[in-house]
Structures are given as C-alpha cells and as structure tokens.
Amino acid sequence: MPVLRNHHTFHLNAQCQQLEAFHDASSALSLCDRFSHHYLLGEGSNTVFIEDYDGAVLLNQIKGVEVHDTDYAIQLRVGAGENWHRLVTTALEQGWHGMENLALIPGSVGAAPIQNIGAYGLEVGTFIESVEMVDRTTGNTLILNNEECRFGYRDSIFKQELLGNVIITHVNFVLPKNYQLNTSYGELSALTHPTPHAIYEKVIDVRSNKLPDPATLGNAGSFFKNPVVSAQQFQELQDGYPDIPHFHVGDDVKIPAAWLIDQCGYKGKQVGEVRCHPTQPLVLTNLGGASGNDVVALAREIMTTVTEKFGVSLEPEVRLVGKEGLVAL
Ligand SMILES: Cc1cc2nc3c(=O)[nH]c(=O)nc-3n(C[C@H](O)[C@H](O)[C@H](O)COP(=O)(O)OP(=O)(O)OC[C@H]3O[C@@H](n4cnc5c(N)ncnc54)[C@H](O)[C@@H]3O)c2cc1C
Image 1 (spheres, rainbow, N blue to C red):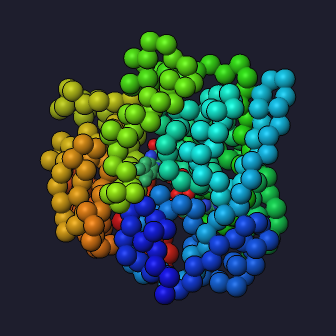
Image 2: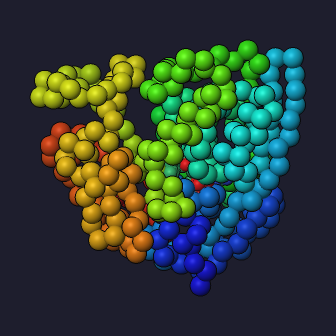
C-alpha cells in the first residue's frame, strides 16, 4: 500500500489504498469516477492522516502560470498544483507586488483559497479575482468570482457548501500596479524602509525563526484557529485577565489561541511523540514516531483545558483524515 508519510507535512506513517496524480481537469474527473472513495491532496500541509486511509489519495499536479499585463494590474491564471511560495517568489522577482506578506506559507495554489490563507495582516482573498473548478459529480466547469467565494477568516465557500464537491483547477489573481504595501502587522511595522523585497525577507526571517520547518520536524502549522468571541464575552475575559492580547474584528474580538494554550501550561508539553512547540504553542509537532492517537490525545486535551479555564472553544485549523475521511475532534 502507498505510504503517505512524505505526502503530508506532519509525516505520520499512514497508508492509503491507491495514490494517483492528475495533471488536468479531465484526468481528475476520471480518477474521481474510478475511485469513488478518494481524498484530494495538494501538498498536505493542512492535512494530517491520523490513520490508514481506506481509499485513493489523488494528488493535484495541475501546473502553469499565464500572465496578462494590463495598464492597471498584472493578472495571473495559475494552475492549482503550483507551489504557493514559488508563486510569491516569482511574482516578487518579476516586480509584481502585494503577495510578499504571504511568503513561505506551505502548500499549493489550489488550496490557498480554501482556507483563505493569511499572515502578516493579509489574506490571499485580497488578490483573487476568481477561482476555476470542476464539479466532482456532474463534471461541469464553474467559475466563482471573489464575492461568490465568500472569503472570511480561514474560511470560504470551499469549506462550507462546496466542501468535498469541487476540484479547484486554476486560481485567477489580480495584482494592482498602484498597490500600497501592507506593513501594519507586528514585526513589519518596524521596517524603516519598507519595500516589497524588505517585506519578503522579513517575513521569511520571522517565520523561519518562529515556526518549525516541516522538512525537519513534522507539523501542519497552526493546529487551531484563533477564536473569535463576542465583545461581551471578551469583556468578561478581560476582567479576569487584564493582559489578554486581542484584535478587534468588526463587533467581535479575536484572541490568539497561542496565548490561551500557553496560559494553560502547554508550551513544550508532550503526549507520546507529539509535542506542543516550545516557541509557538499553536503548533503541534511530530517528534519522529508520533501516532494519530498521540495527535488526537494532545489536541483534545488542549481543547478541553482551554474551554475549562477560559470558556472559549478552540476549533482545529487542520484537517484530520481517518480511515473513512475527514474526522472531527
Ligand atoms: C509550517 C506551516 C506554516 C503554515 N502557515 C500558515 C499561515 O501562515 N497561514 C495560513 O493560512 N496557513 C498556514 N499553514 C497551513 C497551510 O499552509 C495552508 O492551509 C495551505 O493552503 C495548505 O495547502 P496544501 O496544498 O498543503 O493543502 P492540503 O493539506 O493538501 O489540502 C487542504 C484541504 O484542501 C483540499 N484541497 C486541496 N487541493 C484542492 C483542490 N485543488 N481542489 C479542491 N480541494 C482541494 C484537500 O482535500 C484538503 O481538505 C501552514 C502550514 C504549515 C505546515
């Protein structure tokens, strides 16, 4: 049976029944027909195979970057199987600016709109004009414009109504030529001469120091989303914890999950071969021989403890895949 260890960044020793790659929409559809029980995979940086998967894993390898240079913007039509960071780097080298805040986020271009990847004050939805896809059941081609994608915090229509129904084949980006650099967030605001190159280098520097490299220490980035609570709930929390960090999001308040987990004493804590990362407690890592049970046990324990202490529910940001498919914690 094919081994999935090198097809997901958490590097657990799961297997699947078949492993097949597709290079265009029609080969993707015929693989879906051939293997009724399947899981679509980009680069596996948001997926943790916690058990052997009892179906076919289909690898997206749709490549290609088409460029259209207009007076006002650079338009890019990018194959869903392209690597995200490579696209950001190519854009920077070509002088097409804006996406540098999102440098070094692992994964494929096709998965980027699904959870609306974001970092350093920017989300990919800012640059997406439309997303092209095929319907897995009917085989029809669909194009959704930006508004129809309903981008939100780590969210989009692809995680809601369209979950599991479509295969994203291409993403269309627009990079306006009059784009204003975004240095509003954290370490970027300290840049004295912000240029696209400086932002790109700074983001890579900060990320490399803060986050474990999946090539050497298996992980799937932030394991949990940052919870968003009502203003009233936040006020109650702040009464008990005056130093609680927070960001206002419309009428609601977002709290860093890393802070909540840290306050519960989990930084560096280990269950079996899975550890809560000592410098970034939002990341769980595979110390080498982790099992899916270790992952689930530590993740559940963290969720329960945070709820008991703060009355706040944590939701996983990663997809856990078991024998039958997606698994809830
Ligand atoms: C070290 C590290 C740091 C990270 N930092 C960030 C960060 O700063 N910000 C952030 O937002 N995320 C971050 N992530 C998460 C991850 O990079 C993103 O979620 C990324 O978009 C996942 O891409 P992928 O191709 O690896 O997705 P996969 O894990 O392969 O797939 C994710 C989901 O999308 C589905 N899918 C994949 N491709 C397609 C397609 N073409 N059509 C339809 N469905 C598809 C899969 O079935 C699966 O459910 C980080 C991850 C790691 C390991």
